[in-house]
Image (tube, rainbow, N blue to C red; front, side):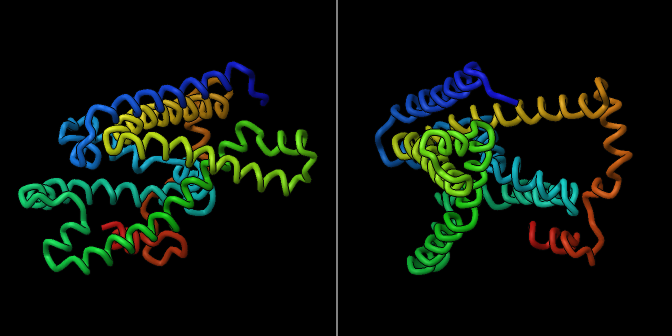
Length: 262
C-alpha cells in the first residue's frame, strides 16, 4: 500500500490541530497551580479521557498487539483489567483521603507520611523508571510505526544513498526526535492543561482508529462479512482467546497478573 498526498495532509492536519488546541488551552494561566494542576478546572470527562489516553499508546498498538498475536493471546489484556480494578479502589478509598490532605502525587504523600528524603528517593526512582522503561519503549515503538507508515528509511536510502540497515537506524532516530519535539513543545509550554486536551484528541483518534481497523480486519477475514470474519477468527484461534491462563503458564500465569496488577 502506497500513501498518497491526501494521507500525509490528513496526518499533518491532525498534528497541527493537537498542537494548536494544546497550546491554546495552556496559555490561560501562568501560575504554578495553572501549570501543574490546570488551575483545578478539569472536569471529570477530561480527567477520564486523560487516564485512558495515558494507558493507550504505541506500547499497546504495537507491543501488546504483537504479544496477543503470539503465544500470550488475550491474556496480555489482564494487566488492563487489573488496572480498572485498581483505579476503582483508588478512586473510592484512597483519592478522597489524598484530596482532603492536599496531596496530589505519590512522592508528596511519602513526604507527608515520612520526610523529604523519602520523597526525593521515590521521585528519583519513578523518574528513572519512567524514562528508561516506559517512555523509551513508547517512543521507540512510535518511531517504528512512523517509519513503517511513511517509509522514512526508504527516503533516507534514496536521498542520502545509505545502506538499508544504516537508513533504518537513522530513520528511527529522526522519528524519535520528531515525536519528542512535538510532544515536548506543548507539554513544556502549557503544562497539565495542554496535556489533558491533547490526550482528549489523541485518545479519541486512537479509539476511533482501533474500531475502524477491527471492523475492516474482520470484514477482510470474512470476505465481506464482519460476522463471518469474527466466527472465522474465533474458530481458528481458540487457544489465544483465554484472558485467564493457568497458574503454571510460562508466559502469563494468572496469579502473577492478579498480585502484580494490584
